[in-house]
Each structure stands twice: as C-alpha cells, then as structure tokens.
Length: 297
Ligand SMILES: Nc1nc2c(ncn2[C@@H]2O[C@H](COP(=O)(O)OP(=O)(O)OP(=O)(O)O)[C@@H](O)[C@H]2O)c(=O)[nH]1
Ligand SMILES: [Mg+2]
Image (cartoon, rainbow, N blue to C red; front, side, top):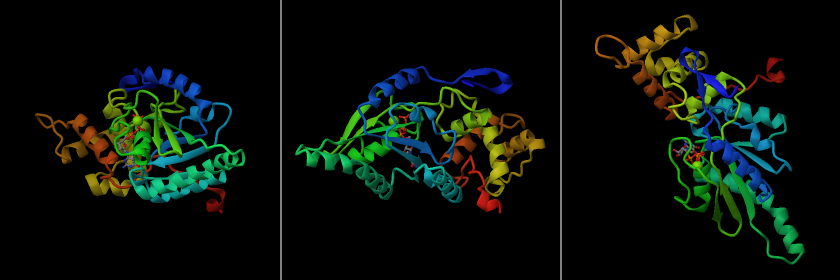
C-alpha cells in the first residue's frame, strides 16, 4: 500500500519523489562499499526498517542500529534485541549523540575492517579505508552518527525528515569513510499502523499525514500500551469506545480550546506529538516484540 488513507478515507501520496532517485543512487553506490550500517528507530523497530536495504546483491556485511534508544522502552529494547538475535540478526540499541555508543559502533566497524587490513599487509599494500554506507529511513540519525565520527558539523542535521538530499562521502581519518545518504521510506507500507507509527516518530513529514489522525492513533496506542504514562501526563483514561470524546476532553483539560468551549484538537495533537518525540510522556516503544515460546511456557 503506497497510498495511505487520511481523514475521511482520502488517499494520501506519501512517498516523496526524491526518494526514487535516492534509491537508484543507492544501487549504484552499492558495489563501492564494504559494509551497510542500517539506521532504524528503537521506538518503531518494525516499520522503521526499509526492506530495500537488504534487497541489493551481492549481500554486504550489515550492522543494524536502532537509534533514539534513549527515548524507547528499555524492556522492549532488550526484548527486541533478543528476538532479533534468535533470528540471526545482530543489532544495537543506541543514542548516537552519546560518545560511549559511538565507541561501541566503532568497535564493530573495526572488526569488519580487520580482514581488509590483514589482506593488504600480506600483499605488501597500503590498506584502504573501510567504506561504510549509512542508510535508513528519514530522520533516524544517519547524519548525526557520521558527524560523531568525522567532526561535529560535517553533515547537515535537523529535527525533521528529508534533510540530507544527496549522497556525500565523509572521512574519519584514514580508516573509516562514510557515505551519508538521503533517508528512504518503504515504497509500500505493509500496514497503515506502521505508517502512523513512522509519522509519530517524525520519519514522515507532518504535512503528509494529517497531524490529528496521527495524534489520535498515538493516543489510542498509548492508552493500550502505556495507560499509566498517559494518565500521569494528561489525566486521561481512554478506551476504544470513547476514544474521540476522551481525546477531546483531554485537549480541553490541557488548555487547548478554541473560542467558545470547543477543544482545539489540532493544538493538542501538536502538543501530544511533541511530548512523545521529546520523551515527556516517558520512554515508549510503539511496536512491541513478539512474546517468545519460552515466555509462554
Ligand atoms: N534523542 C535522540 N535524538 C537523536 C538520536 N539520533 C539523532 N537524533 C536527532 O534526530 C534528528 C535527526 O537527525 P539526523 O542526523 O538529521 O537524521 P538523518 O537520518 O540524517 O535524517 P535525513 O537526512 O532527513 O534522512 C536530530 O534532531 C538529531 O539530534 C538519538 O539517538 N536520540
Ligand atoms: Mg541526514
């Protein structure tokens, strides 16, 4: 489903045009790189992974990073890592603004560089740097990660999706060369929930999916997964049958009102999304790890 339905069932074209050319450029760059660092989002561990990064051949060594782990549920983070590990996928939960986490990533990259260095030594050549493709959906922290390695302001970083528009090689000394790339959303979303979760996390521009739709979905999801946190911040107890009226009452309680006594839903929606994105509701993961067989027993 590349067209997500918005309010009133209207189709929304949500795949920005520049991503098609970014995908073509990615394919061309593929043969020039040694390793892929896929940058996904710990708050949306399923929908923030674009399958395209695993679809090119030949397959390359792959490191999966879940950024924004500082804003995600710690317990869910551990569950996801275990679940992926059991499926044979190595991943790390990180806050790429933290140098301790950067050191962890660096160690993984140097492990992959080691055989290249070894081979060059045997052949009496000067070893070439490790060429690292940094890819992922928009706004996950690809450029932030690279800046941590190469110097603070080398790549443009902003708190909105679609900042990097072109591929850009950046060097961290003689060892590690990074290819920064524009964020690419999946062309087709498996489900509408995933699209809403991505919009809530900030990977899709707020102008593409109606903010009120996304906020109402977030409100509903929080009431199902984190009812205590929702209550603590907004005094709200939501249930599926009265979702809209509780949403509206909560807006009024939070002082979001239009002239007259009507709730200002668009203001409350912006407030809710901003609170979620900055961690004010708590550490939240919108997609939970499947319960494993061991836990059921
Ligand atoms: N809390 C938190 N914020 C982060 C983390 N990583 C990145 N950010 C913030 O996320 C925003 C987006 O970062 P960018 O590095 O521009 O993201 P990008 O993936 O390069 O985005 P595009 O170029 O648009 O695809 C910035 O405001 C960063 O400060 C993280 O691990 N935790
Ligand atoms: Mg960027």
